Length: 219
Figure 1: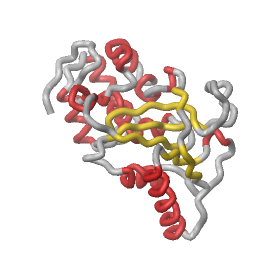
Figure 2: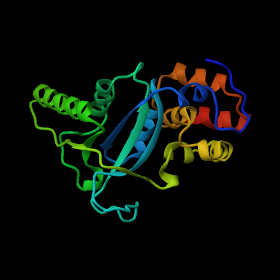
Figure 3: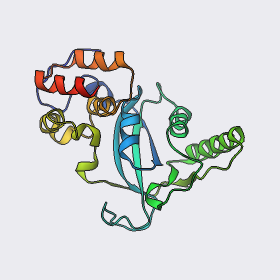
Figure 4: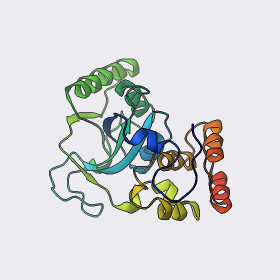
C-alpha cells in the first residue's frame, strides 16, 4: 500500500489503483441507507459506495417525495476480492430480513443487476429461510435504475463528524463520494472495520492533526 500525500485531490491511497480496475456492482435495500453505506464502505474489497432511491416507478424521487421507491446502498466491489455471495452474506447478517418494514422506503430488497445476481439472491434467500425456519420479507427484483440521493446523505457518518467531515469533503470535492478512502473512513467512524485496519489507514494518510484527532475520537 503506497503512501499518498494529502494534497486535496481526489486520488488517494487506494483510489488510483481501484478507479480503473474492473468492478461489479450490487444494489441493496436494508432500511435506512446511512448504516449500510458505512457497513460496506469499511469492507475490504469494496471500492466505492453511494446511496440513492430505487425499486419504484416515480421518475424523480427525492428524500421528501420518495413515492414508491426504497432507500438503497449501491456498492462497487473488486470481484477478485469479494463475490456477490460474500456481499449477500453481509446483507443477511446486518439487518432484519424476517420482518416487514413499516414503510416501503425501508424494505429489505435485493435489486439484481443481471440474471446471475437474481438467481444467487433467490438461492441465498431460500437457504436463509431454511436455516432460520421462517420466511424472509426480503424481495428480489431486477434493478431498473437508481436516483442518487442528495449530497448530505452521501457518506453521512463522515459528514456528521465535526472538522473531519467538512475538511475531507472540501479537499476531495467532486471525488468525495467515489473515493475508496472516504468510503473506508465513513465506515470506520460508524464503528465498522477492524482496529488495525483503521490504524493502518490513518498511518498511511498525511492528514492535518485536527482531522486525524477527530477521526481517532470517533474510531
